[in-house]
Length: 417
Image 1 (cartoon, one colour):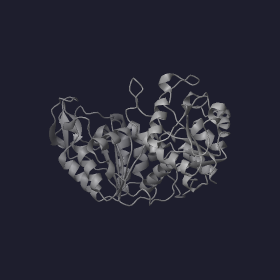
Image 2 (tube, rainbow, N blue to C red):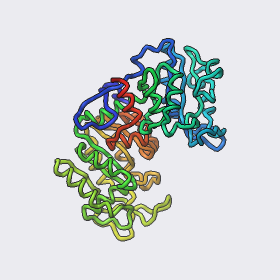
Image 3 (cartoon, rainbow, N blue to C red):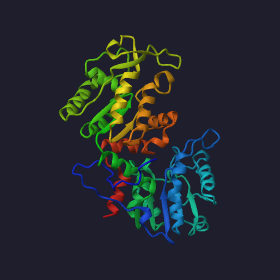
Image 4 (cartoon, helix red, strand yellow):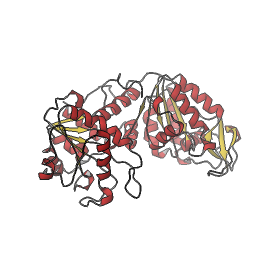
């Protein structure tokens, strides 16, 4: 990941006046002898036996833990995992597999402590400077999801310093993401959360121009607020998937049986018009890849966008369109990427996304990518090391793009005043 350090402190929201409040950062604090409580995002996928199948989030949490340990702190870490019932710890909801993996990554024992909210002998027996303790699934605690003040105050008594390093949950106001930050003696951002916000700020608040956004997906309705927010800021808005089909309808183009939302054509047209008034553009496909069904065995046909027939389904952009869009990306100063432009899961409809991914990888622009399908495409095409910053937060990433306040970050900003 390149160019992650040379970025300015940024806001958790897209500001209207351009003011730039900041928050405390863990690496700037004296940690010696302090009790540090880290809210991490360790919500990793597991198979039916409980074995962790993908540990990216655990590995991403390690720098924060090591930073606290190196500073001489006694470290507590917690996270949610799955969708437990509050007040009931089932075996499948336990962080035990995470504790085992963390122990391997850190090269030291990581004991798991249950019933930890009020401290107690089990926690005191293992918590001391230079050690790390994993606190059992925080969403098992009654009042966690509702951000119960009483629960937050009890947890705050456990620590000297609270650290939020879980960008993936920053859009939720819960007891361990928001309430605890209110009542802990000191509240700050960990290195992962800070890096996410730095990268988002560089891409959206102080971007190198031209600023190009790629927003793709099945429905305009699911990303309408993102499209509206970006339409006021970007120089080129590349749309893909069902979103592009709706914009094609708005421009009077035929899309056959393709996925679209005809009732949102006026919204799409308004975005096109608003950008045109600013001298910005929403480039639409000149050629497409179609099929008469969506399946791994479907036959892909390339054709001009003007030749789409009544029974055709548009499942990817064509090579001419991909080349044009790649040229736009090549000349960009900043690229924000959320969503593949075709049904990339099937190789015959992956060409457009692959070509745009390659263009981003080879561009000199600062690039930031987020969203589950986007990360899957990045992995499929092997360009992880060529993206400026890959966001670990799905919902939080999208809400930042929409210009929404992220509660877990806003409270850190308040505490820094």
